[in-house]
Amino acid sequence: ITMFLNLGDQETFLAAKLTVAERKQIIDQVEKTSFDFPDDWELELRVRHVPLGGTEGLVIRGTHLLCGGTGNCETWVFRRDRDNWVSLFDQEAPVVSGFGFDQETTNGLKNFLVSTNTSAKKESRILFRFDGKFYRQSDCYDVSVNATAVEKIEKVPCK
Image 1 (cartoon, rainbow, N blue to C red):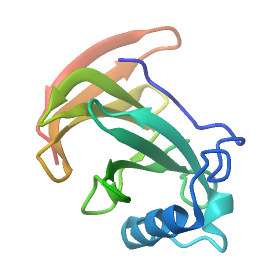
Image 2 (cartoon, rainbow, N blue to C red):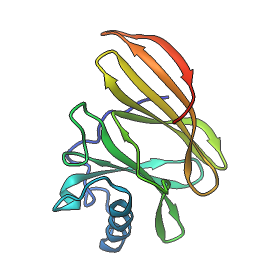
Image 3 (cartoon, one colour):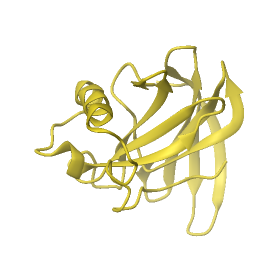
């Protein structure tokens, strides 16, 4: 799995060629599941088209207000459903430092892996699988890291 850390400043709604109606659809759903409310959603959020396996997807990521001090930012995944963009998280979106998509799919969508910095030497990773409607936590891991590599991965119960 290739892990991504951030979306670039140039990855805006306009650059993603999303219409005004699509932007409104996405922002309305993001507002319902975010932990804070920026003055300007389009300035706060970054957008990247991603293949989800069989369907078109978007990763939406906070940049400033929707990020914590350790580089973890709130991150959503949306899928195209006919003419609509639908959030794949029914609750608050995960706040993560990195994300990636597995080649393996569950119910037609690629599994979504996230990592969260918990300290300088620890991160947690969560694998989300699509249940037919939303991404749900499937497998959780505590990971010990040093400056150059992963030292230990331990499977733990998901919270």
